[in-house]
Image (tube, rainbow, N blue to C red):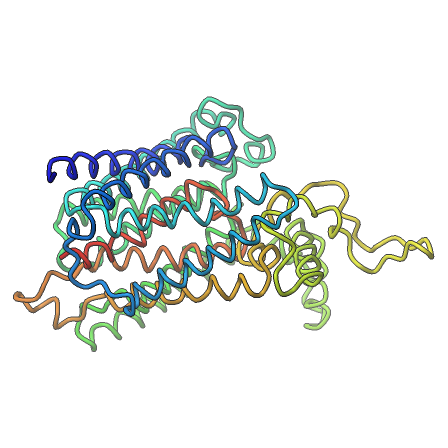
Length: 462
């Protein structure tokens, strides 16, 4: 029986590793013909996991610290409640395919997390961690090489989008540079803790430095504004939580030094004429010093409203206002876009056109995951998602070891690198999702699920 359980466990692990590793290389599994094969593989992995449970029951697990009333248990229970709500809204949606994809984008990362939390052994967790690191590094290396060799006219074997390669923006294995930057941000989340961890070996520290350099280079080449701001936010997260292993006086000294260095770097970049910096400045226009502050604020607001993102955000807000409690329906943004795209100051009876008609482009995604969640699932869904997200973030935060734990040789080895990587990944995607739709990319969501559940799985099974 033990041999059977071992075989089933390794099959389940291999399938999940296959999906998480290869999906970013197939354009993030964005298109349905790539999304469905990888989704099927995740379901197959879950079936083998469930088969182990049916055959061997709870005795197959040696979980010492799990409780339904712990932070982990409450996180899982609250996310299951959210999934039930999402499933109900999915069944009520008018466009089945759009709703099905939306539902699966929440369900599949949950299944990945459950597999890792309760199905992986120590060796499998280590293989997954190392594979994640190597795979993201390879994705970044490919993106940088492709940028200089083909100038992004090719994305893997497919033609790239003219709007991106004409702007000389690196896209890696994704069609959009923002999503390439998103996966590289997760690489940075894996790398920074390895550099900061006092218990990391020299080899892992070197690997962390190499990954950090590659990830930041890839973000710069992508010219993604959201990714640039996210890197700054990750720097702030490092300042806040990165020194938990250090004595208090050293921790505060480093926080101050890093903060001043970061501010100086931002100022230096702000006054430069780099093309990447100019992309940030273009959002705010150019005005002479004689214009009043209020006029500048009005101009900036007008400029933001006229951008494609501003129009998408406005449409999403108007859509949410039409059904604020339960939203317009799972995955319905892309189908109802034209209904809400135009501003609501038009009057058909008096033949008055809206100020903005938004009829010249189509918005498949809101480019703001949080706003799209609110729009499609309403205030109820938004709150139901925030609860498990907040609980899980708090669980990861509490796993960061203190100076005393690091110095205590008797205590279990604190998993600073893994826990801090999970924490940074939550910060990273939580912030970048305010200005993009990385979590609508299946591969990024699946990689994120693996990163944030690995450290808790390690703790539960120690």
